[in-house]
Image (cartoon, rainbow, N blue to C red; front, top):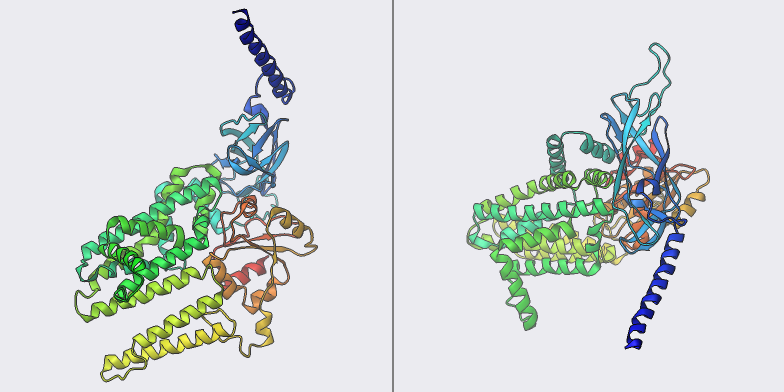
Length: 602
């Protein structure tokens, strides 16, 4: 009995000693304090200053504490004062137990916030500063916000001057306001309803870009797959489900990207995802050609038939899934309106307003799809041989979509060869080599001959090493000047490599291009903009760097986050000292003329 009492007592004594030692070690991290510091003291703001173009502030984490770089938020509470994207020095990358791979700051971090506009001529700005940090012992504070008052010098931003009346005013050149920053400022300071209407209109314009255009054959193929049973009402219903599913997915993903800073859509650009989606297009196209009676392997034939029949039934759930997948895989590229919304979400954390605006943008992109899909139900023939011809045409479009999809995962010569095969086969289907007696047959034969000729040129181009659909034979007899139009970028894959390259720039300015194999606009910039002789000649005056973020690994994500970017395409410009030139970023596709004008301004 005595022994039974002594053992628990000994255990209690051991636990007490261990707890005391552990507590002493934990408290030693904080200089012997009895408890955690108040977050306002642990993360002190100051000093704060401002010049004519920016607000400069420092935030200092006490010893034993650190701040998350991506949790900084800055918002102006003064009407007419518009802030740009803050310049935050890169932090130390660490694996955090709460947030995964993040950048953190210890000690003092100096932040510059561009002052884009001061239309009210305000002399002071009420600035809301948001941040979040943790203690080394594993305790994290919730996100906090503090409001500080900053005195603005005369002539700050684009607002008025504080000089006495009649006195000469020095010319103050404000930081240029990029399109995406202007849209972000509109979200922050304008009424919600007009802003939502604006972004809906911008979405309608984006619907006619190569980023959204591929959704047209997808939706049209769904409608055509209904056969002669389709009605205008049913076509409108299916189109509405597709567009709403696409818009809701786009808005949800956009909010997550804005809050996290990671391009979630990049996850769905893995080669196996792209190939699987392309295979789905092929399966749907084969059903429109009526080829399932061929003696395929029984297991494959059963799966393809089930997939085709389910799609032909046009269940609303199936159409909704196609809309979701289109938003994630085919989805729109990074554009200035999209980046404007993401900047707003990331800087304010306002997911509600950001989500509503994203939904309006996506609905705008889907509006033409809704019109096209509904119209297809009206003009598609209801019976007869014409129906088979129309379905075959949509089958060709879906095969073209499959080729367009896998272009992101295979060499360009493979894409060109597949396009050539499809064009030649389409020409044969149109009767290019058949006898034609009547007018329509002769017209079809002529179109078939043209398709077969174009396909042959593509096949020749692919066989001789080119991958350009628009100029498959351009490399034959190309002049030295044309070959000289090519520009070479030095690769950078991490923040350290970028900093080292900027130090090597010497007296040159630097262009940093973000590229990915799955980025449609990136390939457009290479094919139509960087290849222009005038653009290439001007670009050679800069140090040219390129970050290929196709793999979207942790270093790529850290590099994007350090510059406040959400994904490609994006081009960032640095001056001779290695500092970014504010307001000069290019987001999305720009043609050669517009990009050359931008370079000349620099």
